[in-house]
Amino acid sequence: MRTIFFLATLLVATAAWAQIDVPDEVDPYRLVVATLATPIPDGAYLADGGWEVIGATSTQAPDTRTDGATLVWTGPPGEYTIIYDGVLLQDVSFVDGDGNQVTIRSYVGRIKERATCTIGGEPDPGPDPPDPPSPGGPYQIMLFYRADQLDNLPEPQRQLLTSRKVRDRLAEDGHVLLEALEEGSLGGSVPPRYKTWVDAVVGDPLPRIAIAPKEGGKVKDFDLPANVDLLLALLAEGGE
Image (cartoon, rainbow, N blue to C red; front, top):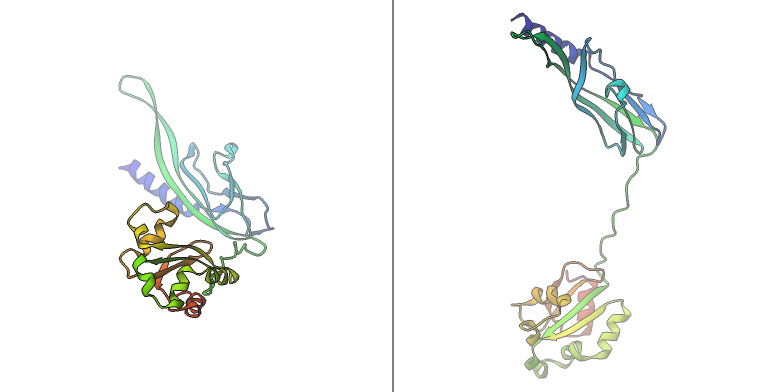
């Protein structure tokens, strides 16, 4: 019973003494030394657990000459939290009932402490976020139709599917007309590069137009506009 009381008292004292010595602030991109400044009872030593510096870009293995009580680390400008979480053990020797000398590791207590340190300079804002896609493109474009529709479509709409002038007009604005696919292609062998496009329009009424950002992205599809002016308006608004 007396031994249990001693251990409990030591645990409370260890938690109360625990601290980390680290500069409040250092110059940019300099190595920082953090040292555990906890009085350790005679015969006890640090065991399981160790250091963590939240946000550090580099840490060096603890100095073995100080039994893991020192850490060297660095990072870009900013504020850092340094944490030490470890266990204190102690080797206890005694003679067992057979007269043999026995040594066991005895749990003494736990050290868990944190501190803060600021590395000076302006924090790195990180890479600039990518620009959102322009509502006006440029776009990749695919057209879909049924062969028996061509003769019945109004001439301005039929030109969207067949006219070289329409293709050239789109190219002037930076768009790329990939293909005008007839319905028979939707149920047959489609090149893998067009599968996403075909999947987007399957089951929708034809004729249709499908668009996606020129650099790649989600495919959206719509009813085929009635003429080139309405087509250009659709592209300018991004289908919205």
